Length: 368
Image 1 (cartoon, rainbow, N blue to C red):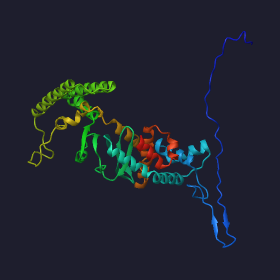
Image 2 (image 1 turned 90 degrees about the vertical axis):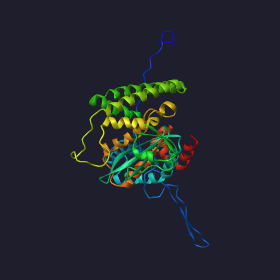
Image 3 (image 1 turned 30 degrees about the horizontal axis):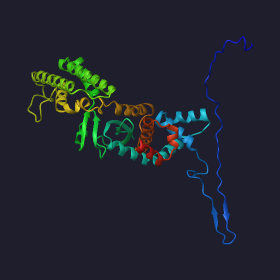
Image 4 (image 1 turned 135 degrees about the vertical axis):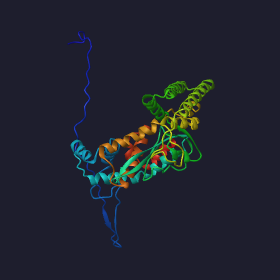
């Protein structure tokens, strides 16, 4: 082939991984000296973090934490993976020690995330059951689009302190005991409840309310995409439509025969029982401002899906690895997972984050 006859070329590329390399072992030697005059002996200091005769380095620890707390591998599978891919022999006690040490190291970072979430103009909150020591405890989630804070508590009613701004949640009543905040309710929950009423109870008002909420969501999303607020006239239309559906639904339920009290027909104290649809109507009526806040405030989303997504992986962790043996282990998990989830939202490199100094990460977080 010559330059005169060539007609070009076709390229094909193959991407592959390099062969695993042997472990890098760095030996630090601290030399000792004795003063010839007074006999005093001194020894050089080891670098920060070098505290044992033999220990694993930061890169190994970062991989362990990433696989354990982000990819949610069980400890035995994690140890097998590290041995197969990197030739690193780990036991469960070593993995637990790495997790414990890093949880202590980044506790201050998690505290900073907690304070930033509490002070944010808009935050999402949710809670989910967590099995710890054979008992049901609670994992509380407080998050924004850039931050995630997890905390574990024996009580479901344990609420985050010093919260201001708007709280998006799913109408769990203790949230309404918080002072100095405004509320926005998750309409994805409302749509699920309305769907059940349409399919099971055949309640016409629920079908109409479904249609209203979906159209209102579509209108608010279009306005956000254009960077403009919803027109007051359109908000007024949705508002009147909402009130009409509520009035029709309440009239329907008030015309229904009263439900029998549980345990017989004898006279009992307390309000008479209500149907599921009636309870939902009363909530939508009493909390109307919170249900429709996404129409009047462009910052407020239609649903609480952000907090639900942040909590979904926690449930997956339990399905894969089961519950936690101790409260300490669960709290370590909450600290490391807060760090990893926040790093992902911030666009930070996960492995570099796990090797970074907490003070620098806190400074980057507050500067963002």
